[in-house]
Length: 220
Ligand code: PGA
Image 1 (cartoon, helix red, strand yellow):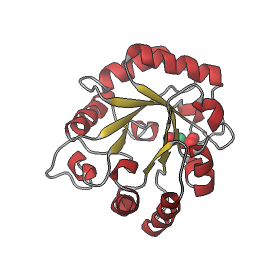
Image 2 (cartoon, rainbow, N blue to C red):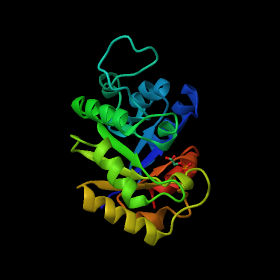
Image 3 (cartoon, helix red, strand yellow):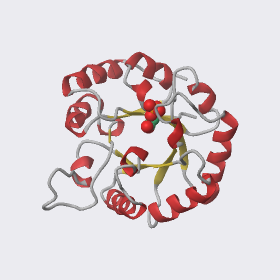
């Protein structure tokens, strides 16, 4: 079965750099399905090269329209992308609560976006207790969603859980909600295949910025 490989570029790549990358990606066939998450400013260009079904936004606002300077609505995203990431730990660290994330998820669902909802523990936190809270509060009223399990301590650190630990976390998440589960946190071309054997796909940060590495991961 094909897996889902998502590239979270975070705050990297200008519009022209994004274009270069997308042209390369467009030329390449991959074993697994890929979705890229550029900055908002590069999304329309990425969409013109790859199509909406291979594009996503890294965040979204929860209101439909109005006086919200700097924000982007789900409807605006949907015109250029099918996917949205909600609840990345880097956004949670900026103060986004489970309640706010739930508003974003509900609004995104209403606009027809496919949601990748991130959950994950910090070092020392009770993982299963946290999962229950993040899922019940963040995804109340949200049915069609993909969950990304991203331990905060594994993001950008080169440290990862073992394959067995990921398997256990994925199974626990699936016991709470009927969802596909991606793994994210220091995924590389070296560990991708191993992790893919215990989950439905990967959310890749740093290693997704290099097209050659990302293609290797997408073909794992
Ligand atoms: P990383 O980031 O692959 O650079 O660890 C993953 C993420 O934050 O989604």
